[in-house]
Amino acid sequence: QVQLQQWGAGLLKPSETLSLSCAVYGGSFSGNYWSWIRQSPGKGLEWIGEISHGGSTDYNPSLKSRVTISVDTSKKQFSLKLTSVTAADTAVYYCAIRWYNHSPFDPWGQGTLVTVSS
Amino acid sequence: EIVLTQSPGTLSLSPGERATLSCRASQSISRSYLAWYQQKPGQAPRLLIYGASSRPIGIPDRFSGSGSGTDFTLTISRLEPEDFAVYYCQQYGSSPWTFGQGTKVEIK
Image (cartoon, rainbow over the protein chains, first blue to last red):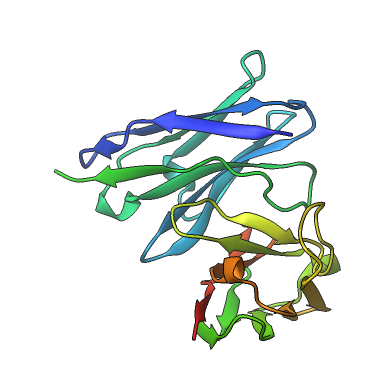
């Protein structure tokens, strides 16, 4: 059974860069889409973007200018960077997998609370 | 982007009762690429239904999904104590993938 374990800094100052990573355990690391999703009280669940097994990325237009998602297949990890954060980026961030094109998110990581405050 | 609107916002029911949750899309979702998730406090969402009506292995059959096009429904036939949670719909037919705002099922 595939499990995701995520980590990263939980407290940032405005204008800093958010950096999170997610490791995949217990399953294949090929043919997937590796995604990041965030959840805030004000905006609910928001898909941030994803990277495919082929290395192509797809980002939410609302965040596209600030987001980079990358993958390290040798380590079975993928990562999120979000630049120039503000208080509006305060949220719980989740990593998740989609197994093929047009598939839902399953499973999800445990979530990381990221707070942006001066 | 496809906007998903869930109703009601909160559903107050007793254990054993039937719950009916609605998800309406701003445009037709291709091939019923619609999922439902359950989220409990402090936990990540859990996939309950995909393809509008299919259950992953391990999801109890009291959970069922139906609908197509722009109107979808999640039904919980008889609420168990562990079913009181927040439920989200999500479309994966057209990027950006989007979620509804959630329906909270609370104990009456």
